[in-house]
Length: 198
Image 1: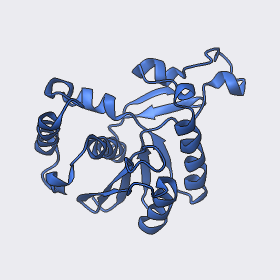
Image 2 (image 1 turned 60 degrees about the vertical axis):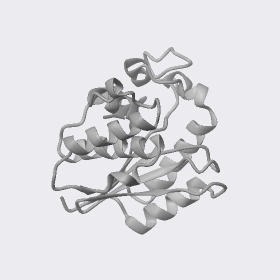
Image 3 (image 1 turned 90 degrees about the vertical axis):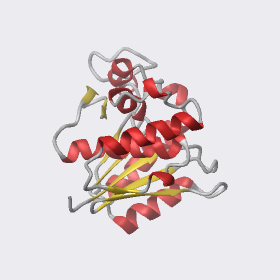
């Protein structure tokens, strides 16, 4: 598969919890932003360097349609996609939502498509909840092994790189991005208000 795609687990700006999973011509590797380094600046620099075909990021990139006067949107807290996926409100996430919206604008200005995703939903679809998704180190090992066994064997990945749940969520975002590449994506929500792609 001759393309580059990013899956991004967006953490707090200086927390060191932002991880970028890069699918690069059949290989998967990870970049974790160091603590006290500006994650948004790091991500934009990586985007300019790798020039991915598209990016999947796990953060809300739009507000409920009520705030934009969209017809049939009367919910101040949730978008249709959030309700369908039982996701957190973009309003509750506040600063993270604002950062994601700003990043989306900057990335689209580079003519690179960026999509919102939900690793928790992908984890559920892949049966990771039954393995203890996001519960502890043993569960992390079980989840990454399960994902590796279900991936296309032609994709090269070193499982030891998946050292945190942030890494695993970035990988899940990348797998959602690869669903789009192969035309197998699932889309939740309303296009005008904001969709979540799995």
